[in-house]
Length: 264
Image (tube, rainbow, N blue to C red; front, side, top):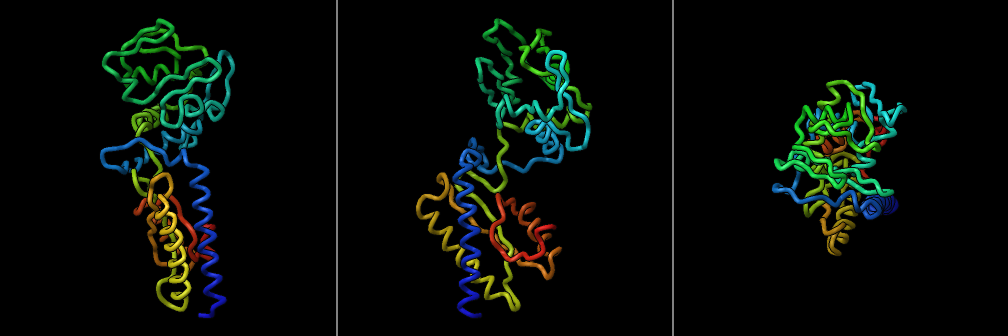
């Protein structure tokens, strides 16, 4: 392998690594998460992923209609996604003097119930009363919710999906992130005519991540690199990249040699 080819491979790998590092720094809040007993939260189920689509984007993953109503005005659910007011982790937020309450399941279902600053009191929510609050704008005691809280129309299946995700929202975290690591993946050739180029790219990636880790990592998390063998064609390479995402639960795919596989 020529020195020029080695340099080219090294530059490709370093550029990809720098891109990941810059993105992680800029989006630092997204890798901040609450501790869990296992350190790595389990992956979301299919139902929870569908519920997350409704919670974060106001969109039904099954293609069903989600409509939000404010006063007498109907608008697409995507303009009134839950996360926009209640936060990415359901913790609640205050903006413009209006407080969107905590909607984590542990808070909603507190046995002691809730006493609000508006003097409104009610018992704990369950799945049935939560669904009713979404549709009718009332709490478990039948009191009206704040006028700023939209009412939502969606299918029973979508309601069940949303409830499933609400039960996970406070512990949901991006895959590949634990309390002390960020796991990333790449596809590289480790055998055949491109093996030398693959080894060069891997060495550069490892050297860069080792340097980042030696300086404290990213928000005190060390970067771990997982490598999958590049396939014989674009489809095979894409399948192995998906394996890194699905089985290895990597946070991101970086660098690699995957010509023609991007569209896959």
